[in-house]
Image (cartoon, rainbow, N blue to C red; front, side, top):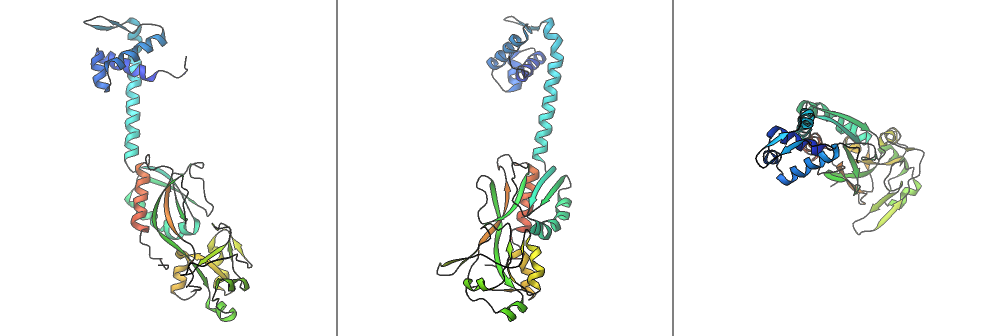
Length: 305
């Protein structure tokens, strides 16, 4: 015999006891009379005693049935309340969302949005995990993640919010001193800084209008696990580096950094809202997804068209 209680049998017996009728219980539960009858019979066999005396005209609880009817009905009511509360929780935007976001993007573009989000959804809490390392959403128990990628993990459900391009830049002082590269292969004689979490194993891939592809492995005095850590060295005019648009845009627009090799395209990916499943996405996660669509769908930092 299974050690798991026969919750279905207890629930159906509770309704029969309450309705004093198999047909009434069946109507209340939305099942057939035969289903109710089988469940009660199964419960009686499991408990080793009759719960009901049945005749063609009436149905009455046995003495044993009376001793457990109240407990069974209370169990049924508590299960109804628990299910109703869970249904309400999943339908209303409330509760904790564990969200993983790349660090530089999160600090620049997600954290500043949080005040408006909490004003709009006061019943939602966010556990914001900032890291450039790709997290295991399912294994580490995250509800969602923002990912900047060329191709997100196909085992997850990904919603593209906007394109994200990469820009190769240097300070004007560096280009004055070392010259401006005209072809990707020219980078082999320049100081080029690396990023440890590069999706292409620290290789810069360039493609021109004719479809020619050139791969360059950056070599220079610094390699980091967060792109922001490259900025001081690049701004000081000591090296060239690749940055996503959302980091490079302000520096390019005010002239502190200059895009180079603009006739060659670097990898163009996207910003994705990623979840383990779309079918069971609770309201709190859906609210966060729609909020990011509204606020990150047409970002001001776009440089690459």
